Picture 1 (spheres, helix red, strand yellow):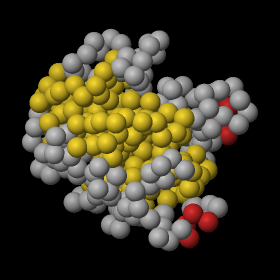
Picture 2 (tube, rainbow, N blue to C red):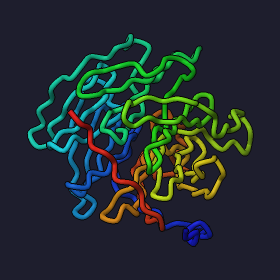
Picture 3 (cartoon, rainbow, N blue to C red):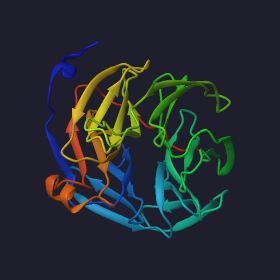
Amino acid sequence: MNHGADSMKTLKIDVLHDEPMQVGECPLWHDVESALYWVDINGLTVNRVHPASGKFSSWKMGSEPSAIAADGENNLIVATRKGFIRLNTTSGEITDICPAPYDPAVNRFNDGRVDPAGRFWVGTMYEPRDKPAAEMYVLERDKLRLAWSGGMTNSNGLAWTPDGGTMFHADTTSHRIDCYDFDVAAGTVANGRNLVVFSTDKSAADYGGRPDGAAVDADGNYWVAMFEGGRLLKLSPTGELLREVQLPLRCPTAVAFGGSDLRTLYVTSASHGRSAAEMAQYPLTGKVLCMKVDVAGLVQPEYRR
């Protein structure tokens, strides 16, 4: 295994899309279209850029979109506060799949990814944040089921190992990353265990942020955006810190590997609620960033109807 990239102290970071997002999230590389999709949760949009041409497209949603999956038929499956919808990115037509199974006054869907068998896993955010009342749902062939309830407040960081046998998951509020044994055939998790917990002292001078969206590379390592930490972390499958990438903004939200060789790392970020001082210090706040890395990512599975 080549660790040459890990000895590099800096990566060349570019801006993919110059318009700041309020809460950019869930970047998804679409290999067939050679395009990056992502959502702006508070901006109510699903967005697409073709990096080769810079062509930008955007679709407005009726409620906050938080996670997207491609299905191989020119559609995106979009998890929104009000439920799952199917967006045809050629015609712009939107069709409902199923309504949200929770009270949308205090919950919304959050981070989501497709498992190796084509199921769309999407966790929720319990917005009062006064108890760990978030839930994990699975959309399988357009039917929604509950995977688990509670034990988390802000579900994030879903990703799978290259062999599909382990699922990673983060609870942003409690600053922890967990992993589970994953049964690909059954679509079930077991043997949940903690991988790493970060300091929750947000007032500390060296506060490193909290885990948000993530992606796994071809070597099985877990790359996670550290919200309010201004950095990405590359962790081994057992939670060891292999690399830290400093970013020119404080609030990265999620990462995705893309490009023809899957060696471009895309990073979404948030500007919503950030102070004027922070925006002045970090003018790239809210923008979508990209950088070349020395390890490839994994092809993201398509959602199966």
